[in-house]
Structure formats: structure tokens, C-alpha cells
Length: 529
Image (cartoon, rainbow, N blue to C red; front, side, top):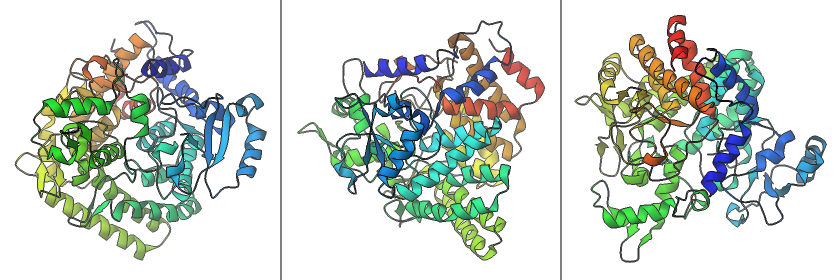
């Protein structure tokens, strides 16, 4: 029932925009939809009553939704400011609280206060997400909404300063223990490229350094390799899973995992670390792996073994490529601020990381980048679209990029790029395609001069979205690129299966990739029916 409620929440929100355009609709309709949808997906303190609603949970018995203010803020002052901005009826539906010093003492999950407006992904995701927000910001900048693009970056800087040194998975209390893939410096530079405000860069530096430290000290740092891993600081089941990830029979993701462990032999990792067959219980280490998998954003796939549980023993190519980009971009910021010695230090960090990635993760025989298991000192040969991250960030040599390009046939299908080559029943595997990975792969190909490949894949992906938009009247979260459809629910057996409406990063990537095409290719995309 909660899945249905979440879907209806999204559908009702978008009803005024999604009127199921006919196949004869004008070619600009999808672009107009995207432009209008940014307003529908926007949350602010003026609309705090809407922002506080969490489709994954229930309100308190009195019908109010908790909103937590960081300990660094004056609760009474913030409340006074909010009362001047939020309609009285809205204030009655929220319960303002100071965040406790020990976040484990939180008994009622709630929204975390942010000072600036932000854009949510849509559907069950009615909060500001970590890596979603980078792609959303790309779309906002493409649509010339600099104010809200800067607000998104400012909110992330606020999170680092006030919520434990992290850009959070999202601004809910149950996400306080983890971050998500790091795109902070890309967002800051995205704003600077439009404003050329050096003071803005200087003010952001302390938070950049704090956030970088999160990823480059233990437990995120693995001293064996000098590279990073994903790691959630919390313990036990993830609250959002227990609350919202249930199938038609009322079984949670964890129930389904136990059933799978009972009936399957798993060569990928030592299952006894994660599951006690005698008592039919998942171990504390299982929940650590499950939570850390959610920090990666790939929740779930079988990339790190079934359900990604073994992720805590890996240096992922995606994360370390992003940290390389963060090091290079911080050096760029320091150059802009005329601090060359500090910039040199950051470039040295980037150079060292790139060498480690190419040494440990590049497989010259297969022509792919893989994730590295630092416990067994082996690559996991699981073809996944994250092989394009080193192209997107510029780590790969020309020869390596050409080898990855030669492997396009294992990913490319009628509707674009499938996330992996394995059908596992997880949403981040075949046959599914996702907007962020399409952007990274396509832009990575462009970076190394593979324009024809980039254009072809972009046309396939954008045409799929456009055809589906004409049928549904709105854009969704993920697609089946093999069958060129958005009807994915029956194929997803683990995690949440509903295809969320909205949808922030799909909207953004559509505009980004569309703008990169020639006018002739744009016409082909918009002729797709």
C-alpha cells in the first residue's frame, strides 16, 4: 500500500503537467514539461509543509511531520523566521525540533532543515538527494535557473558545516550516517562558471576540505591501497527499508534477501559473514554492507556480489574517479584564487589516485575498468557502466578510452546503455538504463573524441524517453533499454520496484544531452513516437 501511496503522491503532484500529449504533440512539449516540472519539484521553507511530508514514512499520531534544526542554529530564531514565511496552516502540520547531540536518540524520523530552496527527484523521494542534486543542478543551469542552481550548492555546503561533515544521502534524519557519491566541487564550479565570483569559491573552501577529509580518512580510506570505499556509520537495518521497501506480500527487502540466501549458493563472497543460516538472521556486518551500498547510490545490483553487500571490501572505480575529479577541481579553484602551491598539492593527490586506479582497476585484456577487492587483492570482473567514469573524469589514456569504446556492444541496446551485462532482478543491473550513467558514459565518449558513438547512444536514450513521455505524459526514473520501455516493475524483485514519476535527474540529463546534439539529431529525437 505504501508503494501505491507514494506513486499516487507523485502522480497527483504532476497531474497539472502530465496531460498525456497526443502523438501529434508539438516537438517542444517535453522541453516545456521539463521546464515546468522544476517548479513542481521545488521545495522551500515557504512550502515547508510540503517538504516535510515523507512518502516512505507516516506522520506522528497528531498528523504532524517532524522538522529538525541543527544544533548550531538557534531553534527559536529559526522558528520565528519560519513563522514569518510559512502559512499558519502549514506550521500546524510540522513539529520543529532541535537535533539531539546523539543522533541515535532520534525516535521520530523527520526532515532536516536547509536554509535555501531545492529541487527533489520526485515520487517517493521528497527530499534533497546527494548525487541526484548534481545532475538536477546541471539541468537547472541548462535552463538558465542560476539562482536555484546556486541554492542547491549552498545547501550542500550548509550540510557539510552543520550535519557532520557530509553531503548527506538526503536531508532526512535516517540519512545522517551516510553521504552519497561526491559531486560537491562540480556543483560549486558550475555556479562559478556563471557568476565568476571568486569570493564564493573562497568561502566554499573550508567545507570542500572538510568533505574531502570524510572520504580520505578511515573508515572510508583503505590504507592497503590508499583509495576510498563506501561506508555508512550507522548500525542495523536501514529505517527507510523497513518502512517503505515492501512487496505485495508485505515482505521487506531484508525478508527477500534471507529467502535468497536460504535457497542459493553464492560463490561471490563468504555468506556466513552476512547471514546465519542456523538462526535465519542477517548479521550486523550485513546491515553495514547494506547501508554502505546505499551510500554508493547503486541500491541494489550484484556488482559487489548479490545485493551489493560485499561493497565494504571494495575500492569502487566510480567513487575513486569522482575523488580524482574533486582533487583536480579543488586545484582549479585554488588556481583561480591565486594559491598555486596549494593547487600543486591537490594535483599531486589527483595524480597519485589516477596511478592507483589505473594500476589496480584497469584490465587491459578485457578493455574495461573494474572495481578492486582490497581484501582478496583481485578485480571483480563484472562489466558495469562505471567503467566510463575514468573517461568522464579524464583518468584514462587514449588507448584505454579506445579499448572501453570497443566494448560498447556489450552495453548498447535499442533504448541506450544497459547498466550491466547481468540480469539479477535488481534495478541497477540489466536490462535497466539510468540517466546519470548515460550522461557520464556519453560525455566520457565525447571527451575522447568518440562523437559518432556519443551521438548515436544519446539519440537512442532520448528517443526512448520522448516516446514514453508521449505515452505517459510524464518522465520517470528508470527504463528498460532492451525492450525500450518504462514498464519495469515486474522485472525488479529486490528493493523498491515502482518507477517513480518526476523525475529530477532524467529531466536534467535529457536537456543536457539534447543540447549537445546537432539540430538534425534533435529533430530525430523529437520525432520519436
